[in-house]
Amino acid sequence: MTIATAQFSRIGTALRSQFMLDPNVCYLNHGAYGAVPRPVYDRYLEWMRLFEAEPVDFLSRHGEERLAESRHILAEYLGTQRDNIVYVQNGTVGLNIIARNMKLGPNDEMLTTNQEHGGVDRMWRYFASQRGFAYKKVPLPIPVPTHAEFVEQFWSQVNPRVRLIFISHITSLSGLILPVEEICRRAREAGITTIVDGSHAPGQIPLDLDAIGSDFYVGITHKWLCAPRGSAFMFARPEVQHLLEPLVLSWGWEPKQPGPSQFVDRHQWQGSRDISPFLTVPAAIAFQQKNNWDLVRKECHELALEAQQRVSETVGEPPFQSIAGAKEWFAQIACVFLPQHIDPIPFRDKLRYEHGIDVSIDVVYDQPRMRISVQGYNSPDDIDHLVRALAKSL
Image 1 (cartoon, rainbow, N blue to C red):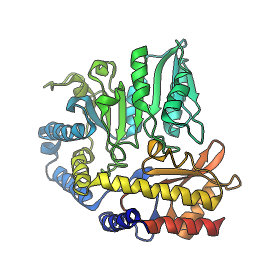
Image 2 (image 1 turned 30 degrees about the horizontal axis):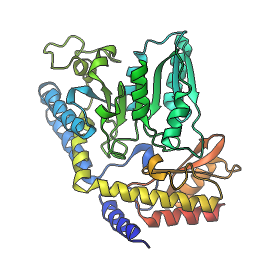
Image 3 (image 1 turned 120 degrees about the horizontal axis):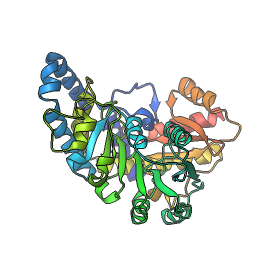
Image 4 (image 1 turned 90 degrees about the horizontal axis):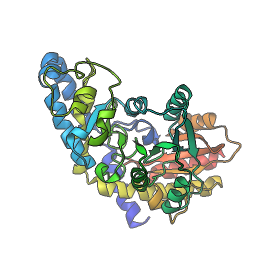
């Protein structure tokens, strides 16, 4: 056992007790819905109890100021200003708000990759069919090249008809970190609007939204930031905030007492809903700061790299990138192809219900793939268990 692995083993063992996951399940699927630490969940319960104690005070009299404070803390964490972000229930809601406001027509083209989330892909296909614009996907080769090579490959598909670029910061299908800052920089120079799907980014990699330079960015805080489910955010640069009409029209359209940001007024209030998950986000940020999450993320990456190598050797299939490019391309999510004959759903269920392992198995490039998510509660024992189960099952 290396020093790094030994250190991670101590971190994973200490943090495991902070989460409420079933001890009988080897949970390597954090990228699906996340997991909430006990201290964060306790704070979430406190907010919900306060809501039930005085619903009118909670929502009508103090809701706006509490949300403003929560957004301020989140904005500092994200590298932007408070009124550049609003809370939404999940990434799907935020992206729908933005997509519905994109004025694309039959003479326009939208450019994305073939690695986007399935639900979001369906959303864009729907809007393309309704409005007549071309929806074009640039394939991401596996194994992946360098970031610089990917940028050139992607940008070679830009033409005068392209008015919108939509791209993931970290892809859902493959866990790959894409060089969004350079893509956004080129797009800004070309007058092309950019939307970044940052669902897997907050909490997994450091963020500076102002430096990234996208027009719009949607991130989820209930995944790698470990906030309660039902918490995400939508970011818009001040220069483009006026382009977004709300998905739900309510009091914020013509507020009795306008706040400092019309963007926030219009999108924040959607009628009666529980804002407790939004108010708990600062507790999630504090939890990670208290537990030296920069180190935790580093150790998670090293364990994910080890998992990728060992699983690849066990199943006899290649990973999604070389070892040399691992730090550039992925953080805490590693992916490996599985043998072609494997039926993904039965194999996933076999691992879950016969071996007690929860891990994502899907089809990418017409071949089964395993997506291994490593979070601070995992340890080398989890990878040992996965490798043993794969050797036995295959």
